[in-house]
Amino acid sequence: MTAVLVHGLSVTAALWRSHVPLLLDRGMRVVRYDHRGHGRSTRGTAALNLDQLADDLAHILRTTAPRGPLVLVGHSMGAMTLMRAVARHPELAPRIRRLVLISPPYAGVSTRTGTGPVHTLLAAGRNLLASACTHAPWLLDTARQRLPITSRWALRSHPLPASDARPVPCREGLHTMPTRDIAALWHDLAGQQPDPGPLQQLGSRLHLLAGSRDTHIPPEQTRLLAVSLPHARLEIVPDATHALPLRHAQLVTDRITH
Image (cartoon, rainbow, N blue to C red):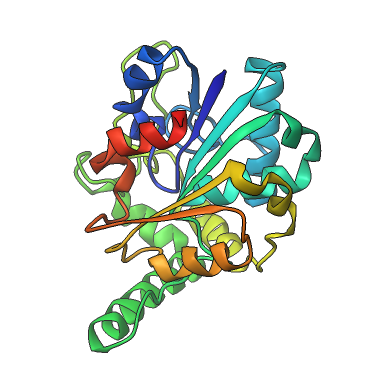
């Protein structure tokens, strides 16, 4: 049994660093990778969108796990990537023993994640940042190059050498991604429309997880997805935020293996 762990936007495969030893102890084979443009994965020349990320995943599966049962696990954008991969590569469905989607939205991501004055202010700030990323990416790149390297938004002039065996910290996923690529990916994710149909064939093999205090992808979004997938299992983790995989590694591992 191979577990394939897929991270979200702005982080790296190090998101799963606590899960790997737990899964290995349970006799599972583990595959994790950095999305293109994140961490050590190069950007390439293909379009940076959800379709491409899903096709990247299919290629990785053909290379690293061409046969045998699969447990596919994705967080946030990683969950969206898995949903798209099931739709674009239906040959995967018979091999999937479990599909664990953590913080998946019903449709696209949004800058507005709730109601009330606080959420209105947050959405206004996020909209302003999104507009700057879209219309003046060169200006933000200049600012990012001056940020301390400890900032998750800092932009490095050169990618890390592939020969460096040290893991790229989880929060450094965007260090090699220019602002124009961040904007392109965000707009693609925001423009997604609900399409739960391809997931319905998985029935009870599908497990949906969400944090009750997630302010990036509110649990209401995951509940909407669950309504359209009546045989899927839905679990709202009390007091968990968008960092659910990091803060609740044991719980996530249990859902992967049971």
